Length: 418
Ligand code: SF4
Ligand code: ZN
Image (cartoon, rainbow, N blue to C red):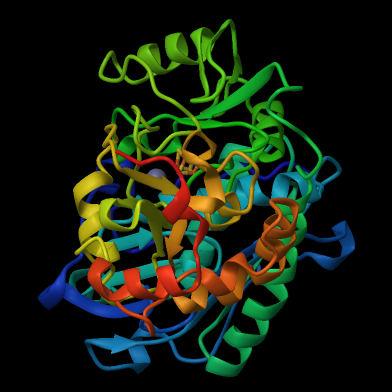
């Protein structure tokens, strides 16, 4: 059975033309996620008999039941079945949710996984846009674009806080399992990296190069995911890129990567380094999970995750940082990266990696603690995380420096950062 759907059954205009459209302040009817409420997206594989194609269910409040300016938690769960469907393809289908929802006029989507963020405009609400239409969009478009692997799709949407929290908890385990599939692979032993140009609709010159030891900066795509995506569509946004000759092993620069980046950035970016924050770092787009910045006074680097809304020692909040460096260009001293990447061996390794990390929000510490401690032990400083400052110590360089000195943070004895 192959389902063919050409038109997307929603009451608003739909197409790539609306992708970059923003829904701001006064125009917002409903907002989900983005740190205001919890929002999570998950695609899972189900058996052919367990999926009723086109079934869309909403559990909880819908747009029509809430007053304008409301906020709701939201979980979007897509169950896909097909003879070729398998776990490897789940992250790829899941990452489509972002642009597929952005195609709807009056709908703005940012982020992915459990840091997704959705806004529905007053205009879309007035036309009768319902949360169930999220299901209609995903059902129609996933059939259209991934007909080769999915035969049946059903969607469940939840807007009750308990259920969204429960699904978020389950999802975290699934995300961790996906992330770990690349453990054991190294960049040195891998000749072919993958590109991702999915974000070029927002940041036209942005090209992610995804290596085994550097996941995509959105956190949603690792090397395995890109390979699976290329298997599904070999003309798609994830292309194999041969590293070519080594230009600088420490900074992480190769001739093949440079050529590819130059070509696919439209000539805007001629080269970049995968392992450095200071010397021509990789470009950053707006959907990175974290942004690292250098702290010259502390001879170190800080990083901040999207969910942390407070001030940081580099003098900017996450939103300001993202607005400043997220346009798809190289910004020395700043770097977008995924949460998982912090504990990968090549994270800013040109500047001594984790030994440079002097500040991050407490919630981020808690989230990555287990993997961080394992990596810190490898580096011979098992209590490194306790020597890193967070917002309870301070949010300026001057405030955190005495703490770093008292803790004998290793960054203070490394060679000068700049
Ligand atoms: Fe792809 Fe990078 Fe965008 Fe993630 S951030 S979707 S890896 S281009
Ligand atoms: Zn992006």
